Length: 283
Ligand SMILES: O=C(O)CCC(=O)C(=O)O
Image 1: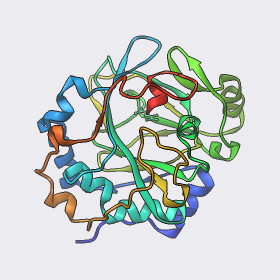
Image 2: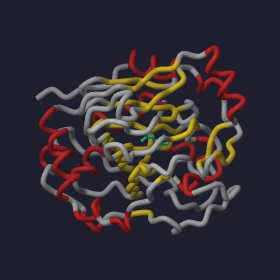
Image 3: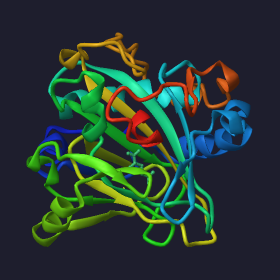
């Protein structure tokens, strides 16, 4: 069976625009398995593993984050060949798993994420270079109404911006964002289940609240280049070889859930060693 693959052209688009949307990166069967895992996996559904991110209006994104990719379905998604080889093409060399997380926005109560760059806070974890990215995999439909990701195309070329606390969230300098908005295209990452959204760590992004009657559920797998091994210990792993799996491992592990055996991060586990920004500085 043929699986989707990131091409050299895709990688060039990623590096030009700071993001890439790969339609149908995971197929219908794989996506249904992920949807089922969200319901069945007890570790994911345990509130004590939820690092809920709250926005200025008091709305919440349920955020479940782990560092070791693991051996279950979500581990296979993070470690499968199309994912790892795609990220390696985009970042130009060997990569390792930095962490994975689910961000789940419930109907009407799911919250917004202020504009930020992931490197705005990963920088403080001892990563010298922005050779890092995230791949968002849509588990549900994501659209403007339910709070899909929004990006400013090409904003990664601005380099790392200062970040500050705005309404309790670590946020890129609002003055810079306001001016960037005047010259850069705003792209809504409207995704169907299984679509992949590759996001450069310096790309400005955010998302709106979920004002719909539907869930907005995504998995984000984050990677660092092996050559960018952080110079200090932090709450995210330093270089750890990533054991790649064949693409069909996702279906093979479709009924395997790590449950409580994940290396979950919990709110308050890691007092921030940077500017003590927010809970957001820990993710
Ligand atoms: O899930 C979302 O809408 C935004 C997630 C995000 O921006 C992040 O994890 O950095």
